[in-house]
Image (tube, rainbow, N blue to C red; front, side, top):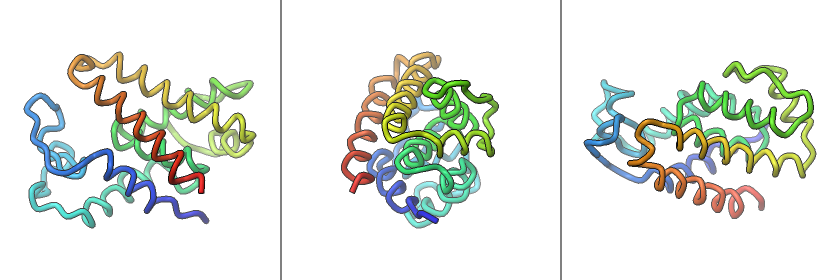
Length: 172
């Protein structure tokens, strides 16, 4: 079994950064991308990167089924789960798969056998098409959010950086 999580976590840390307390951000106080709103029992200012890594592995990587998703889609999917939530990430991945394969798949937010079978059946060219389709679907999702005017430029920049990291780190 592959273990892309360490690389995915390293990429995520480059995208998330350190401590932030933006009053306009609905997540509120965050460190390493972990928000006080999502984790009210955690002292965000004292959060270590190792503790954040444990949270990300269990609550995002594993819940989003990234261990069974091919590289580099697993890294894109993990970042989406962190930034958009696991269910929304699953739905965006399924929408993206449906856009690049004939017959499509059910968009139910659950990464099950049908979703994985479709992912594993993709040719290398279709995998690259899926990467771009997934990024496009995320960009469209961000654009339609109520607070897009505040954060869209940053979200778009995040996707560009993510694609750059994927090109340099996961295609060794």
